[in-house]
Length: 153
Image (cartoon, rainbow, N blue to C red):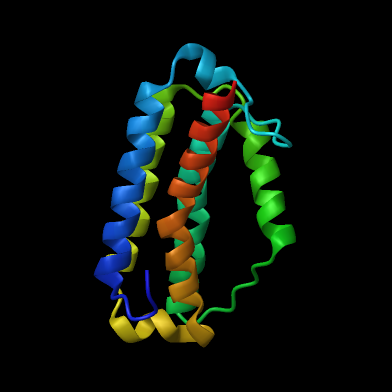
């Protein structure tokens, strides 16, 4: 992805990465689903997959706020807090729930980004563009990490 991407390009990238994550979720065995194969991460596969869907929600919220001219505070502490809260809330997610969550939250962020004007990507010093890039890459980063960790076990 380059810096000259249009909103529709980011939306397409998010949709494609979400589809790859959804296919991964469908392929997981019950053992995979409940395993915590990533070194240093105690979350099971199902919680990490749902984390991707959850992240679409807060990314969409931040993007919408920036697009509306509202101040947005984002830092690693805020993201860590959101992730920790999600991990405790999502301890027993099912594949069906995660697939539905990926679909609904993914659709929302995809629609939001696709509906932006190209110049809106550069609002707040390019923050919307950076958030769109994160949304486009996030599913693939976690999916690849999970696939590699499961293959190593």
